[in-house]
Amino acid sequence: MSHGRDIAAADWTDDDLLTRDEAGGRLKDEIAEVRERLTMLESGGSDAPGAADSVLLLTRRLSALEKLYGSL
Image 1 (tube, rainbow, N blue to C red):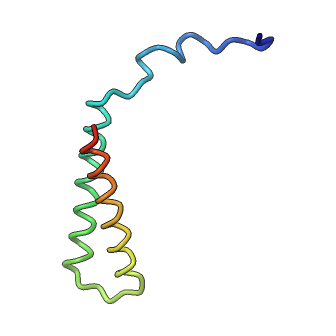
Image 2 (cartoon, rainbow, N blue to C red; image 1 turned 180 degrees about the vertical axis):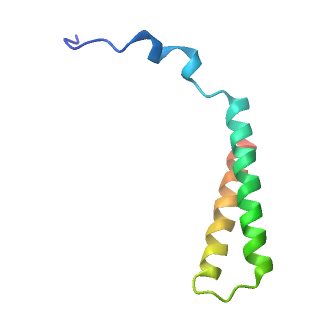
């Protein structure tokens, strides 16, 4: 038994939940942004320190985002 205050009912309404459609839309937007950044890095031929690491990290992120999007 709880002796504290109950959480306000508004916090538990469906309006606060992210739907699969909304999540899918957000993931698609993020995937597009990551692809754009990755393309810019790869086509820029940058010899800047860390460019190869950035490409690797973005490639991993893109893969994870696409996998998650596919699971919706």
